[in-house]
Length: 286
Image (cartoon, rainbow, N blue to C red; front, side, top):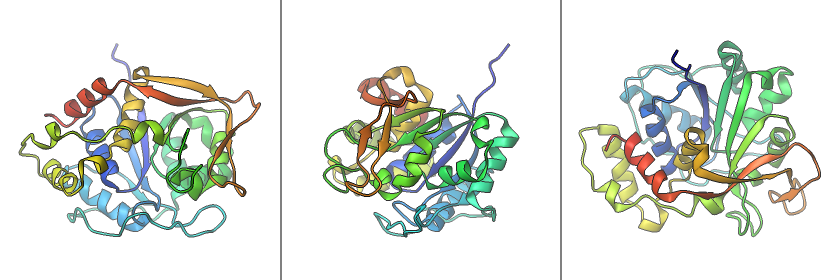
């Protein structure tokens, strides 16, 4: 009897690595994507959602997509790291008009069991947890791109996603759900190699992605969101350390500290580089 594919929900934005991650997710056959939401990060949430919608249309996919949070749980505006721009412009469908926390909860309840992939601040997910007492009963695993072991990318000790909404991060981290975390120390250690950019295809979406990557220096061709997708599909390719952690919300905002809680999370500290690049090549059909 064939094993049922897991249902996956993606909460993301539309940076370089997130575009690559979405393309690879659309090409993957290990899971079924049931919905996508945006959260302000590289672009604002609306621009990101519209780009994602257009990208799915170019892939001839019909997926429920929702624009999510513009501000964190303390009602502070999320300052974008990049700029608002139209990357893909082929929308023939419409964004959901639901609140993102309702959108996520309804999909989770309809599916029964869900894995969540979160590449941005955890605001949308935290809102669903707070609003719906039974929301996490429909969630199997959460995969998070956040945190750091050494130097941060916003302050000396903090990483952007946890710094942007530390309150949301703590709401997610305190819950008893299997949570896998990809720190930037690991995710920023690899960039997209020339070997992949030199391959030619007849896929207009991938050709556009290649053009976007070629506009960046080699050391800025980030692939961290793609690595989080790899963690979803091949967690055995990573070495994890189990830790109970929380995020500082005021002093040293966004930095993580260990706690004595028995509710531990899995923080990646190593990945098999070569199998990860093989995964990228395979999911891009190269």
